[in-house]
Each structure stands twice: as C-alpha cells, then as structure tokens.
Length: 279
Ligand code: C2E
Ligand code: CA
Ligand code: CA
Ligand code: CA
Image 1 (cartoon, rainbow, N blue to C red):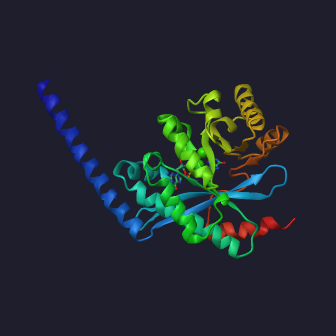
Image 2 (tube, protein in one colour; image 1 turned 90 degrees about the horizontal axis):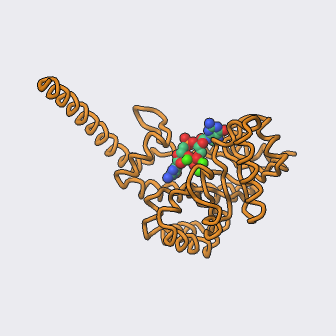
Image 3 (tube, helix red, strand yellow; image 1 turned 180 degrees about the vertical axis):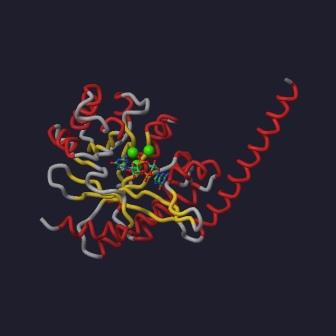
C-alpha cells in the first residue's frame, strides 16, 4: 500500500509539473500575443426587439494563436486573470473596441453603443477610471457610447467600493450593465443601491423559454423589475424565433444571441451593420 501511495505521488507530481510547464508556456505566449497583437475582437449585435435595429455591440475577445488556432476567451481569460496579464489584455480590449466604434462613426453609420466586459481584477484595480478616461479622451469618443459589463459577483465582492467606482464611471457618462443577471446572489434591494443602466438576463434562463414555467416566471419578473426601475433589459442567448416571440410579448427591450447573429470579426460585422440599415 505504501508503494502504491508513492507511485501515485510520483504520477501525480509528474502530472503536476507537466501541467505547470504547459501553463507556463501558455503564459509566456499570451504575454507575447498581447505585444504582437495576436488578440482579435469579435462583435455581437444587441438588437431592439421592437424594431430589429442594431443598437449596440458587445466586444468579445479571441486569441488567434499561431499554432493552436482561434482560441475562445474561456481558454485563456482564466489564465490571464491568474497571472495578472488580464490588466494589459483588458487595456487592449477597451482601446480596440472604442477605436472600432469610432471607425464605424467615421463611416457615417448611426451611433452604436459598445459594451466591454470588465474582469474582476480590473474592478479592484485603482486605475480603471483613469485608464478609461484616457482612452476616451485620446480617441475623442463620446463616453455615453461606452457600456461596461460587470457581474453580480464582482459587485457583491465589495459593495461600497463598487458603488464608488460605478458612480465615478457614471459621472463620466459611461453606462453600466450587469452581465449574466440572475445566477448570482444579488438581491433586488441590493440592486437599488447601484447606479445600473442595463441588466442582461443570463442565457441559462432564456434557453428553455417558452416551455419551462420556472424560467418563464423568472424572465418575466426580471423584465417587469427592469421596467419599474427604469433599467434596460437585454435577453442573452436568444437562438430561436419562439424565444424572440416570448420576449417580444413581454416587451423585453433588447435581445442578443445567435438568432440574430453570432459574434463576428469587425469586417463581417460592418457588412451586417450596413445591411441592417436597409428597411
Ligand atoms: P459573456 O460576457 O456572457 O458573453 C456572451 C457569450 O455567449 C459569448 O461567448 C458569446 O459568443 C456567447 N453567445 C452569444 N449568443 C449566444 C447564443 O445565442 N447561444 C449561445 N450558446 N452562446 C451565445 P464567448 O465569446 O466565448 O465569451 C465567453 C465569456 O468570456 C464572456 O461571457 C465573458 O465573460 C468572457 N469575455 C469575453 N471577452 C472578454 C473580454 O474582453 N474581457 C473579459 N474580461 N472577459 C471576456
Ligand atoms: Ca458580457
Ligand atoms: Ca453574459
Ligand atoms: Ca459570462
């Protein structure tokens, strides 16, 4: 038994060092990726339910890895968070997303909001307000076009600090969205304390509507709450016409999801924008 324990341990430590080596290699290649601009932003439209008009976009980062191909954020954001590389990565994302909306404006497309996902790390970092203000100033961008998405768990980690940061962002004209709403632990009374403009209903609630009575009730309640608090409600993960119909019947203001469009590279999204202008 003792020997077997030892073997297991050897196996385990071999596995661990292999894993650690892999992570280390990935870390240094991610560092290079940020410098060499191997990161790319994809854009997914947010659509007004009533009119079908694209009102804004969410920027979603990808890593065009020279050997591994196109990596999704789930494959490298956690590593970036762990290693602190999320800080330069996020700065790149914010600047790139803002540059892109300015570019669309330059092409005389109607003004579009751009949503950028914040990481937990950025939210405890003291430089968020400064860094954001700098990007907006450098690009001469209208701050009211920028939306920052945070999750409930980020807000609840330190509510006093959150309120302070959010008020700073609001004072600049930036709008705040709660991402993945409904799966966290924020209570409705909590919600009132935060200067929130937008709620994005998590995809897991939308997945089985219409059909699942509990999910239907939750979705309906969130939409009703948004209306009474004057918060814009966006449904995430809309894939099917029945879902759109259900949400439209409840007067959910905006939808986002594959039904309208998958996230696309800037070039393809630009084509979609021009097509969306035609009646
Ligand atoms: P998220 O912010 O909740 O973004 C929505 C995710 O749902 C995206 O996955 C999007 O491609 C996917 N999605 C959109 N519509 C549908 C649909 O109809 N059905 C299904 N099944 N999925 C849909 P993606 O791009 O893989 O991003 C995953 C997560 O990675 C994001 O979730 C966000 O939390 C994080 N992320 C992405 N970009 C960034 C970034 O620039 N910075 C940070 N900190 N996090 C990011
Ligand atoms: Ca998001
Ligand atoms: Ca989300
Ligand atoms: Ca998410």
